[in-house]
Length: 365
Ligand code: UDP
Image (cartoon, rainbow, N blue to C red; front, side, top):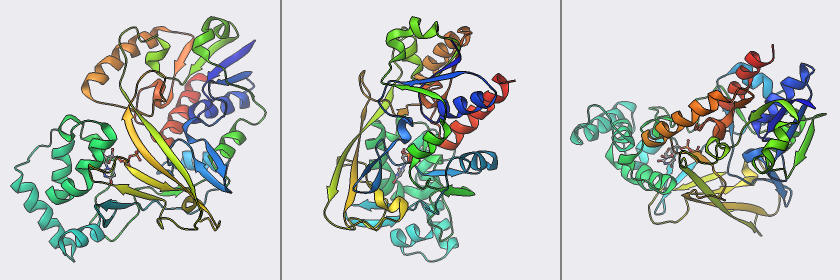
């Protein structure tokens, strides 16, 4: 008999398991995959930590979270500065003075601001109602057309006019020569990889892999006083109210017999025609000096049952359906739902950890 059964060995589950164990609780962690660390899981290929479920760059403004993760890993000084490739033209990301200079030839912040304002005016946008209008009002029509429109439609499989504006607000816009993608005080990659970091979180805790909770739910529920469920909330309720939409991602990973393929960890292909959204060259997350390199092309697709869900589609329709599932979830007094899938929320890693720590404060008194 356990105090807590944690379903899912990703960040949310691992943080909860660690904190509960610290408080003397008996915890069992299960995961249906055959590895820990959820979607931050890394696998070593040719001496390079390959981010198997897509690039993860740890960044946060939350000092408590930063101190917390540093207990389990040492972080390197990696700073995310992706490059956008639009039909062979290269631009700096996020949108900054280098981007504006390349796009328009402007050299001062004043000229760049005027150019954006002029394009925003011409588009007649006062109050942005969707991602397209939000993007144009932030960076103007040219940047929207070349660096946002195609990429976003590929990533989300929906027109920019159908998407909520908060998605694009994740990206900073700066009138400075600063290529750092994130507005974060702290940033880096755990040395030795994310799997090692999660392994350290789970040290001394019983973990069973390849165990599908929903297949043997009654049996598992009988094993613990409470359940922390970090899987998809609609799957938990057997999709009884309908399926929430997710975007899934597929990776084509190749080992190349060369030390340097693209000179950067991430290159985004922002046109609509290239079938993948970006290419990740994993060694650059850790300043690799290996003779070979490993790259992953990332293809985005609509999720269907059996696929791995990655991104919740936080639009109005899905928001309403989630609210109904949340009502059901609140009635399950033995179960706590958490994490990107359990709360159907486009969480970054630091926010997931903050939310798990918050829950611990309430739950583990
Ligand atoms: N985005 C874009 N062009 C880019 C990179 C991002 O238009 O080159 C937009 C796109 O809509 C994307 C959003 O910004 O969904 C958020 O990007 P982010 O890099 O935060 O997404 P993630 O890394 O979580 O996939």
